[in-house]
Image (cartoon, helix red, strand yellow):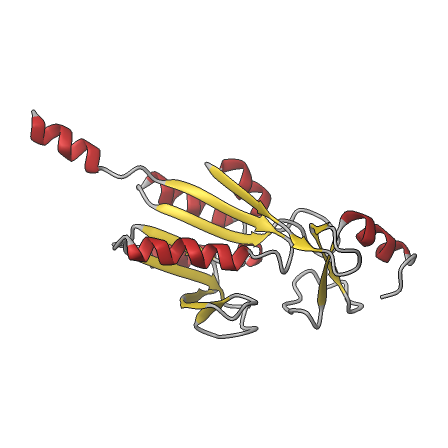
Length: 196
């Protein structure tokens, strides 16, 4: 009887954690912190990012503060399922760039007993929900919304304002292409009340 109870306690429960916010809000930094702690706990960790994100490195997830961790770049969410065997924790950065199949992938991994930690932009540069992020936030057990500081006025920023004139949805960039701004400054920039 005692051995049976001990075995039941060791069976893992999976869940999904989502870290969402604008650019420069610390999403990747928080993802790296959680993944490094999982490694300290001697858990098997696999980290993935979309192949399209090669801003700082082809094979690392890198924060704007230059902290990094080795990862596997993949071109679709389905590849995450294929590469997640013998894993306790799956980390996914820049989730907004993945296809909507990522929602099912994360739910399947969590149902298999894995801890799934996902970081990504919750809104695109137009202020609209971005890719699979709204669906992931809806089905996650834990959602952390992080904020940057508005570079225009110093308030909390929740928008990523694109500095370049482009209507392309996916435009990978950093501070040369985007600013973190609050709602008020975002609306003023969009309407031309504030100069870019």
